[in-house]
Image (tube, rainbow, N blue to C red; front, side):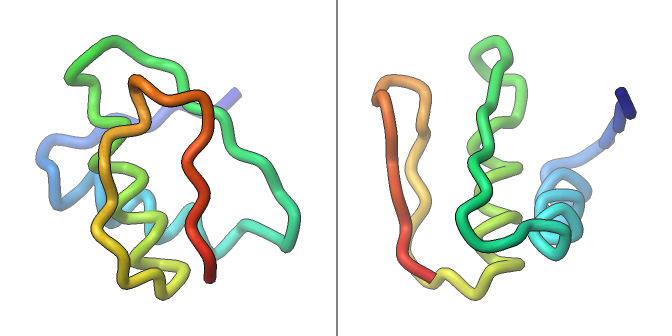
Length: 69
């Protein structure tokens, strides 16, 4: 398992965008982490990398949140 450490929200978003380029149709991504660990920021980067223009909200308190690409 690879680990990544980012030092700012922009670095976290950039990592998410880079990760988005590795995704294929019908991939499922599960996020796990403590409150405030950067999950939403990461997902904002993934969405940006996929061309999603919707406002990305925290996935913490929902079972699933889907965005159309």
